[in-house]
Image (tube, rainbow, N blue to C red; front, side):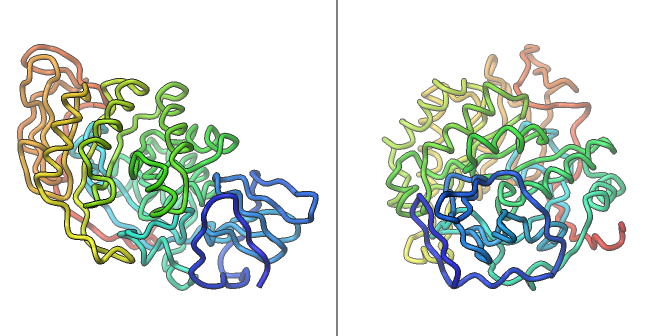
Length: 380
């Protein structure tokens, strides 16, 4: 097998298949030819160094003819319309629908991956749907979706495809959302996020130990991505932390994490603390107790986070939004279903007039909790 080496810890599950002719193969920008003849991919901080014919750990970026190519352009694991709150994004066009899709592969190797059938796929046959960017934009527009989400696996690895979809969406008035771990290099970060309207960044923990041992990556680049989004872009973003018992759920870690968020990103970035369920290679861990989620939200609020939520649990009180000035409930929310609504079309509290940070563009949507699979072939 052609050699693959990386500068960060790597978990290679099986030898990657040779580059095939299934689907378009497109050139990429972020790579360097090394003196030893290998090509270094510079899309993410893994910096995979490839000999001819080898794939990176992400599976979809590979070396071909002395360059790095994307092997899965135009191919997806399937399309579905979701509520935007499922991403989760609570302050971005609440109540609207989003056309969601992913591809195959991932540049992290999380032991607890809850989309492992997609993100850990090493088979092109898992890519069932083929769609050009214009077809995806057209489908979103005709189905009444306010946005398209790159999700299920990390869109950083299919940057070129995501970029072209974002351009096609903007041409028809549809916005784009990236659900990402934020594990991207300084070189590629700006080019990726300049096409994105909103993001949910998965801050998996707040220790290098967790990132090294559990995800086979690093924390520091993720923190750099968060600071970049806040201080260098207009991208609306929210943060998710999946709380795993015994791994990243201590009160001390949540205190340090939320303190860092307020100090470096400000108080208005919403944070979602979500419940873990056993999956993939972490079947020995129990589900996250509700009290742990409640603790995390309480610590976040005490540290100055204005909008802290729990996820993967039914709790109207802790999933709803509140005005940080007068305390009035502005959006009632239970799972993905909206109830109370006390915001103006621009996001101002109807009780005291304080504006809630986020993207509020007109009245609330009414999509609710529905999930609707989409046959993308019907849209060309």
